Image (cartoon, rainbow, N blue to C red; front, side, top):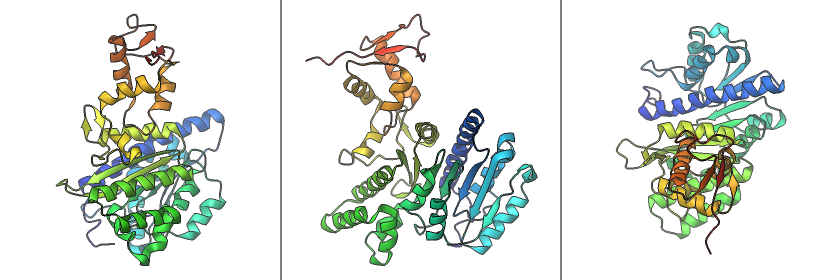
Length: 374
Protein backbone atom coordinates (compact mmCIF):
# COMPACT_ATOMS: atom_id res chain seq x y z
CA UNK A 1 0.00 0.00 0.00
CA UNK A 2 1.44 3.37 -0.90
CA UNK A 3 2.10 5.81 1.93
CA UNK A 4 -0.13 8.45 0.42
CA UNK A 5 -3.14 6.24 -0.36
CA UNK A 6 -5.06 7.11 2.80
CA UNK A 7 -3.64 10.58 3.35
CA UNK A 8 -6.82 12.33 2.28
CA UNK A 9 -10.12 11.42 0.72
CA UNK A 10 -10.33 12.32 -2.97
CA UNK A 11 -13.54 13.24 -4.72
CA UNK A 12 -13.60 9.81 -6.35
CA UNK A 13 -13.12 8.06 -3.00
CA UNK A 14 -15.98 10.05 -1.53
CA UNK A 15 -18.31 9.14 -4.41
CA UNK A 16 -17.32 5.48 -4.10
CA UNK A 17 -17.98 5.55 -0.35
CA UNK A 18 -21.34 7.26 -0.86
CA UNK A 19 -22.41 4.69 -3.46
CA UNK A 20 -21.53 1.85 -1.08
CA UNK A 21 -23.04 3.38 2.08
CA UNK A 22 -26.20 4.60 0.33
CA UNK A 23 -26.77 1.16 -1.15
CA UNK A 24 -26.13 -0.53 2.19
CA UNK A 25 -28.74 1.65 3.91
CA UNK A 26 -31.50 0.95 1.37
CA UNK A 27 -30.54 -2.73 0.94
CA UNK A 28 -30.66 -3.27 4.71
CA UNK A 29 -34.17 -1.76 4.98
CA UNK A 30 -35.44 -4.01 2.18
CA UNK A 31 -33.85 -7.14 3.66
CA UNK A 32 -35.00 -6.44 7.22
CA UNK A 33 -38.54 -5.77 6.00
CA UNK A 34 -38.50 -9.14 4.22
CA UNK A 35 -37.07 -10.90 7.29
CA UNK A 36 -39.82 -9.49 9.50
CA UNK A 37 -42.56 -10.37 6.98
CA UNK A 38 -41.28 -13.91 6.40
CA UNK A 39 -40.11 -14.51 9.98
CA UNK A 40 -36.60 -15.31 8.76
CA UNK A 41 -33.07 -14.89 10.16
CA UNK A 42 -32.79 -11.73 12.28
CA UNK A 43 -29.28 -10.74 11.26
CA UNK A 44 -27.74 -8.95 8.30
CA UNK A 45 -24.03 -8.71 7.60
CA UNK A 46 -21.66 -6.21 6.09
CA UNK A 47 -18.25 -7.63 5.15
CA UNK A 48 -15.30 -5.53 3.96
CA UNK A 49 -12.23 -7.62 3.22
CA UNK A 50 -9.85 -4.73 2.40
CA UNK A 51 -11.12 -2.25 4.96
CA UNK A 52 -8.16 0.10 5.39
CA UNK A 53 -7.86 2.37 8.45
CA UNK A 54 -10.72 4.03 10.27
CA UNK A 55 -10.02 7.52 9.00
CA UNK A 56 -8.07 9.28 6.31
CA UNK A 57 -5.22 11.41 7.57
CA UNK A 58 -7.28 14.54 7.04
CA UNK A 59 -9.86 13.16 9.49
CA UNK A 60 -12.49 12.05 6.95
CA UNK A 61 -14.29 8.81 7.82
CA UNK A 62 -13.39 5.77 5.74
CA UNK A 63 -16.14 3.54 4.35
CA UNK A 64 -16.23 1.13 7.36
CA UNK A 65 -16.92 3.97 9.79
CA UNK A 66 -19.49 5.50 7.43
CA UNK A 67 -21.31 2.15 7.36
CA UNK A 68 -21.23 1.83 11.15
CA UNK A 69 -22.41 5.41 11.57
CA UNK A 70 -25.46 4.61 9.40
CA UNK A 71 -26.12 1.52 11.53
CA UNK A 72 -25.86 3.43 14.82
CA UNK A 73 -28.59 5.79 13.62
CA UNK A 74 -30.96 2.95 12.67
CA UNK A 75 -32.70 1.01 15.46
CA UNK A 76 -33.23 -2.12 13.33
CA UNK A 77 -29.60 -2.24 12.25
CA UNK A 78 -28.44 -1.74 15.83
CA UNK A 79 -30.17 -5.03 16.66
CA UNK A 80 -29.28 -6.98 13.52
CA UNK A 81 -25.99 -5.84 11.97
CA UNK A 82 -22.99 -8.16 12.04
CA UNK A 83 -20.04 -6.14 10.71
CA UNK A 84 -16.83 -7.91 9.75
CA UNK A 85 -13.73 -6.01 8.60
CA UNK A 86 -10.35 -7.23 7.46
CA UNK A 87 -7.09 -5.69 6.29
CA UNK A 88 -3.74 -7.40 5.79
CA UNK A 89 -1.89 -4.39 7.24
CA UNK A 90 -1.49 -4.43 11.05
CA UNK A 91 -1.45 -0.65 11.30
CA UNK A 92 -4.64 -0.29 9.25
CA UNK A 93 -6.43 -2.92 11.34
CA UNK A 94 -5.38 -1.28 14.60
CA UNK A 95 -6.33 2.16 13.31
CA UNK A 96 -9.75 0.80 12.32
CA UNK A 97 -10.27 -0.77 15.76
CA UNK A 98 -9.53 2.55 17.43
CA UNK A 99 -11.77 4.38 14.99
CA UNK A 100 -14.64 2.00 15.74
CA UNK A 101 -14.17 2.35 19.49
CA UNK A 102 -14.24 6.14 19.12
CA UNK A 103 -17.52 6.28 17.18
CA UNK A 104 -20.23 7.99 19.28
CA UNK A 105 -23.02 5.51 19.98
CA UNK A 106 -21.06 2.40 18.96
CA UNK A 107 -22.28 0.70 22.14
CA UNK A 108 -25.81 0.66 20.63
CA UNK A 109 -24.81 -2.17 18.27
CA UNK A 110 -25.89 -5.54 19.65
CA UNK A 111 -23.09 -7.34 17.79
CA UNK A 112 -19.64 -5.86 18.31
CA UNK A 113 -17.90 -5.17 14.97
CA UNK A 114 -15.11 -7.64 14.29
CA UNK A 115 -11.76 -6.56 12.84
CA UNK A 116 -9.29 -9.11 11.47
CA UNK A 117 -5.84 -8.86 9.96
CA UNK A 118 -4.93 -11.28 7.19
CA UNK A 119 -4.45 -11.98 3.50
CA UNK A 120 -7.55 -12.58 1.40
CA UNK A 121 -7.18 -15.88 -0.39
CA UNK A 122 -8.37 -19.45 -0.72
CA UNK A 123 -9.14 -19.92 3.01
CA UNK A 124 -11.73 -17.12 3.07
CA UNK A 125 -13.34 -18.35 -0.16
CA UNK A 126 -13.64 -21.89 1.20
CA UNK A 127 -15.12 -20.58 4.46
CA UNK A 128 -17.82 -18.68 2.58
CA UNK A 129 -18.47 -21.65 0.29
CA UNK A 130 -19.01 -24.00 3.24
CA UNK A 131 -21.34 -21.71 5.19
CA UNK A 132 -24.92 -20.67 4.63
CA UNK A 133 -24.62 -16.91 4.93
CA UNK A 134 -27.13 -14.54 6.45
CA UNK A 135 -28.11 -11.72 4.03
CA UNK A 136 -24.74 -10.11 3.38
CA UNK A 137 -23.45 -7.07 1.55
CA UNK A 138 -19.85 -7.76 0.55
CA UNK A 139 -17.50 -4.93 -0.38
CA UNK A 140 -14.18 -5.93 -1.95
CA UNK A 141 -11.83 -3.00 -2.46
CA UNK A 142 -8.28 -4.28 -3.05
CA UNK A 143 -5.46 -1.89 -3.89
CA UNK A 144 -4.69 -4.01 -6.95
CA UNK A 145 -6.41 -7.30 -7.74
CA UNK A 146 -4.85 -9.91 -5.46
CA UNK A 147 -7.59 -11.68 -3.54
CA UNK A 148 -10.37 -10.72 -5.93
CA UNK A 149 -11.84 -13.72 -7.77
CA UNK A 150 -15.02 -15.01 -9.36
CA UNK A 151 -15.19 -17.71 -6.68
CA UNK A 152 -15.04 -15.11 -3.91
CA UNK A 153 -17.92 -13.11 -5.38
CA UNK A 154 -19.99 -16.22 -6.11
CA UNK A 155 -19.39 -17.68 -2.64
CA UNK A 156 -21.43 -14.78 -1.25
CA UNK A 157 -23.98 -13.74 -3.89
CA UNK A 158 -25.27 -17.30 -4.34
CA UNK A 159 -27.14 -16.95 -1.04
CA UNK A 160 -30.52 -15.24 -0.53
CA UNK A 161 -30.30 -11.50 0.05
CA UNK A 162 -26.55 -11.33 -0.67
CA UNK A 163 -25.02 -8.69 -2.97
CA UNK A 164 -21.50 -7.56 -3.77
CA UNK A 165 -19.68 -4.44 -4.88
CA UNK A 166 -16.04 -4.73 -5.87
CA UNK A 167 -13.29 -2.37 -6.96
CA UNK A 168 -11.95 -3.21 -10.42
CA UNK A 169 -8.52 -1.68 -10.97
CA UNK A 170 -8.68 -1.60 -14.75
CA UNK A 171 -5.16 -0.27 -15.34
CA UNK A 172 -3.41 -2.89 -13.22
CA UNK A 173 -5.64 -5.68 -14.55
CA UNK A 174 -4.96 -4.60 -18.13
CA UNK A 175 -1.21 -4.85 -17.46
CA UNK A 176 -1.70 -8.12 -15.56
CA UNK A 177 -3.24 -9.81 -18.59
CA UNK A 178 0.11 -9.49 -20.33
CA UNK A 179 2.22 -10.55 -17.33
CA UNK A 180 2.87 -14.28 -16.96
CA UNK A 181 3.94 -13.81 -13.33
CA UNK A 182 0.36 -12.93 -12.33
CA UNK A 183 -1.39 -15.32 -14.73
CA UNK A 184 -2.94 -17.24 -11.83
CA UNK A 185 -4.57 -14.07 -10.45
CA UNK A 186 -6.00 -13.17 -13.87
CA UNK A 187 -7.35 -16.71 -14.27
CA UNK A 188 -9.04 -16.45 -10.86
CA UNK A 189 -10.56 -13.11 -11.79
CA UNK A 190 -11.94 -13.94 -15.25
CA UNK A 191 -11.86 -17.73 -15.33
CA UNK A 192 -9.00 -19.38 -17.22
CA UNK A 193 -10.81 -19.83 -20.52
CA UNK A 194 -11.95 -16.20 -20.66
CA UNK A 195 -8.55 -14.90 -19.53
CA UNK A 196 -6.86 -16.94 -22.29
CA UNK A 197 -9.25 -15.45 -24.86
CA UNK A 198 -8.41 -11.95 -23.68
CA UNK A 199 -4.67 -12.63 -23.77
CA UNK A 200 -4.89 -14.10 -27.26
CA UNK A 201 -6.99 -11.20 -28.53
CA UNK A 202 -4.60 -8.60 -27.18
CA UNK A 203 -1.57 -10.42 -28.57
CA UNK A 204 -3.07 -10.81 -32.04
CA UNK A 205 -4.93 -7.52 -32.47
CA UNK A 206 -3.77 -3.92 -32.27
CA UNK A 207 -6.34 -2.14 -30.13
CA UNK A 208 -6.87 1.44 -29.13
CA UNK A 209 -6.86 1.99 -25.34
CA UNK A 210 -10.65 2.51 -25.21
CA UNK A 211 -11.17 -0.70 -27.21
CA UNK A 212 -8.99 -2.67 -24.81
CA UNK A 213 -10.91 -1.24 -21.86
CA UNK A 214 -14.27 -2.08 -23.41
CA UNK A 215 -13.20 -5.68 -24.10
CA UNK A 216 -11.93 -6.20 -20.56
CA UNK A 217 -14.94 -4.66 -18.83
CA UNK A 218 -17.41 -6.47 -21.07
CA UNK A 219 -15.69 -9.83 -20.43
CA UNK A 220 -15.77 -9.18 -16.68
CA UNK A 221 -19.48 -8.41 -16.88
CA UNK A 222 -20.16 -11.55 -18.92
CA UNK A 223 -18.11 -13.71 -16.53
CA UNK A 224 -20.16 -12.49 -13.56
CA UNK A 225 -23.44 -13.10 -15.38
CA UNK A 226 -22.41 -16.62 -16.42
CA UNK A 227 -21.43 -17.32 -12.81
CA UNK A 228 -25.01 -16.62 -11.76
CA UNK A 229 -24.84 -12.91 -10.96
CA UNK A 230 -27.99 -12.19 -12.94
CA UNK A 231 -27.79 -8.41 -12.52
CA UNK A 232 -24.47 -6.63 -13.06
CA UNK A 233 -23.70 -2.92 -13.30
CA UNK A 234 -20.22 -1.53 -14.02
CA UNK A 235 -19.56 2.10 -13.09
CA UNK A 236 -16.47 3.85 -14.40
CA UNK A 237 -14.32 6.53 -12.76
CA UNK A 238 -12.21 8.88 -14.86
CA UNK A 239 -9.30 11.05 -13.76
CA UNK A 240 -10.07 14.75 -13.15
CA UNK A 241 -8.73 15.74 -16.58
CA UNK A 242 -11.00 13.11 -18.22
CA UNK A 243 -8.00 11.71 -20.10
CA UNK A 244 -7.99 8.14 -18.76
CA UNK A 245 -9.93 5.63 -16.72
CA UNK A 246 -8.76 5.17 -13.14
CA UNK A 247 -10.99 2.28 -12.05
CA UNK A 248 -14.48 0.79 -12.05
CA UNK A 249 -16.96 -0.37 -9.46
CA UNK A 250 -18.88 -3.54 -10.26
CA UNK A 251 -22.19 -4.33 -8.61
CA UNK A 252 -23.44 -7.94 -8.65
CA UNK A 253 -26.81 -9.26 -7.48
CA UNK A 254 -29.26 -12.09 -8.17
CA UNK A 255 -32.28 -9.88 -7.36
CA UNK A 256 -33.88 -7.24 -9.56
CA UNK A 257 -34.78 -5.15 -6.50
CA UNK A 258 -31.12 -4.80 -5.55
CA UNK A 259 -30.27 -4.04 -9.17
CA UNK A 260 -32.88 -1.29 -9.32
CA UNK A 261 -31.73 0.26 -6.02
CA UNK A 262 -28.09 0.36 -7.11
CA UNK A 263 -28.94 1.65 -10.58
CA UNK A 264 -30.86 4.54 -9.01
CA UNK A 265 -27.93 5.31 -6.69
CA UNK A 266 -25.40 5.19 -9.53
CA UNK A 267 -27.77 7.30 -11.63
CA UNK A 268 -27.59 10.01 -8.96
CA UNK A 269 -23.77 10.03 -9.15
CA UNK A 270 -23.44 9.67 -12.91
CA UNK A 271 -22.92 12.21 -15.65
CA UNK A 272 -26.09 12.40 -17.72
CA UNK A 273 -27.27 13.28 -21.18
CA UNK A 274 -30.97 14.12 -21.68
CA UNK A 275 -31.66 12.78 -18.21
CA UNK A 276 -30.13 9.37 -19.01
CA UNK A 277 -27.21 8.17 -16.88
CA UNK A 278 -23.97 7.46 -18.75
CA UNK A 279 -22.44 5.29 -16.03
CA UNK A 280 -19.27 6.83 -17.46
CA UNK A 281 -19.18 4.44 -20.44
CA UNK A 282 -18.89 6.93 -23.23
CA UNK A 283 -16.25 5.11 -25.38
CA UNK A 284 -18.09 1.82 -25.95
CA UNK A 285 -19.91 1.06 -29.17
CA UNK A 286 -21.93 -1.73 -30.74
CA UNK A 287 -18.99 -4.14 -30.83
CA UNK A 288 -19.59 -4.61 -27.09
CA UNK A 289 -23.41 -4.92 -26.97
CA UNK A 290 -23.77 -5.23 -23.20
CA UNK A 291 -21.87 -1.94 -22.77
CA UNK A 292 -23.46 -0.29 -25.79
CA UNK A 293 -26.90 -0.79 -24.21
CA UNK A 294 -25.74 1.34 -21.26
CA UNK A 295 -25.23 4.28 -23.62
CA UNK A 296 -28.56 4.45 -25.39
CA UNK A 297 -30.05 7.98 -25.46
CA UNK A 298 -33.61 8.59 -24.30
CA UNK A 299 -34.86 8.79 -27.91
CA UNK A 300 -33.89 5.15 -28.40
CA UNK A 301 -36.16 3.97 -25.60
CA UNK A 302 -39.34 4.76 -27.54
CA UNK A 303 -38.16 2.80 -30.58
CA UNK A 304 -37.06 -0.14 -28.42
CA UNK A 305 -40.42 -0.28 -26.64
CA UNK A 306 -42.39 -0.22 -29.90
CA UNK A 307 -40.23 -2.99 -31.38
CA UNK A 308 -39.78 -5.17 -28.30
CA UNK A 309 -43.37 -5.06 -27.06
CA UNK A 310 -45.25 -4.88 -30.36
CA UNK A 311 -48.75 -6.30 -30.05
CA UNK A 312 -48.51 -6.81 -26.27
CA UNK A 313 -50.61 -5.52 -23.40
CA UNK A 314 -48.83 -5.16 -20.07
CA UNK A 315 -48.55 -3.04 -16.92
CA UNK A 316 -45.83 -0.66 -15.83
CA UNK A 317 -44.00 -2.70 -13.18
CA UNK A 318 -43.63 -5.97 -15.12
CA UNK A 319 -42.69 -3.96 -18.23
CA UNK A 320 -39.99 -2.07 -16.33
CA UNK A 321 -38.58 -5.12 -14.56
CA UNK A 322 -38.26 -7.19 -17.73
CA UNK A 323 -37.27 -4.49 -20.22
CA UNK A 324 -34.88 -2.26 -18.25
CA UNK A 325 -32.24 -4.86 -17.37
CA UNK A 326 -28.91 -3.98 -18.95
CA UNK A 327 -30.13 -0.52 -19.94
CA UNK A 328 -29.39 2.85 -18.32
CA UNK A 329 -33.00 3.91 -17.94
CA UNK A 330 -34.58 4.30 -14.52
CA UNK A 331 -38.30 4.30 -13.68
CA UNK A 332 -38.78 8.00 -14.33
CA UNK A 333 -37.23 7.62 -17.82
CA UNK A 334 -39.74 4.89 -18.67
CA UNK A 335 -42.65 6.82 -17.20
CA UNK A 336 -41.71 9.96 -19.13
CA UNK A 337 -41.38 8.15 -22.46
CA UNK A 338 -44.52 6.06 -22.06
CA UNK A 339 -46.65 9.06 -21.11
CA UNK A 340 -45.32 10.98 -24.10
CA UNK A 341 -46.05 8.03 -26.38
CA UNK A 342 -49.61 7.91 -25.06
CA UNK A 343 -50.04 11.64 -25.64
CA UNK A 344 -48.79 11.22 -29.22
CA UNK A 345 -51.17 8.24 -29.75
CA UNK A 346 -48.29 5.80 -30.35
CA UNK A 347 -49.63 3.54 -27.60
CA UNK A 348 -52.88 3.33 -25.63
CA UNK A 349 -53.43 3.13 -21.90
CA UNK A 350 -56.56 2.06 -20.03
CA UNK A 351 -57.71 4.11 -18.26
CA UNK A 352 -56.36 6.92 -20.41
CA UNK A 353 -55.01 10.26 -19.19
CA UNK A 354 -57.29 11.96 -18.29
CA UNK A 355 -58.94 10.63 -16.10
CA UNK A 356 -55.50 9.69 -14.80
CA UNK A 357 -53.38 12.51 -13.48
CA UNK A 358 -51.03 13.68 -16.22
CA UNK A 359 -47.60 12.00 -16.13
CA UNK A 360 -48.68 9.09 -13.93
CA UNK A 361 -49.11 5.38 -14.61
CA UNK A 362 -50.84 3.47 -11.82
CA UNK A 363 -50.06 -0.17 -11.10
CA UNK A 364 -53.37 -1.34 -12.60
CA UNK A 365 -53.14 0.71 -15.81
CA UNK A 366 -52.97 -1.43 -18.94
CA UNK A 367 -50.37 -0.35 -21.50
CA UNK A 368 -51.33 -1.45 -25.01
CA UNK A 369 -48.70 -1.53 -27.77
CA UNK A 370 -49.70 -1.67 -31.42
CA UNK A 371 -48.75 -4.66 -33.54
CA UNK A 372 -45.92 -4.19 -36.00
CA UNK A 373 -47.08 -2.97 -39.37
CA UNK A 374 -46.40 -5.47 -42.14
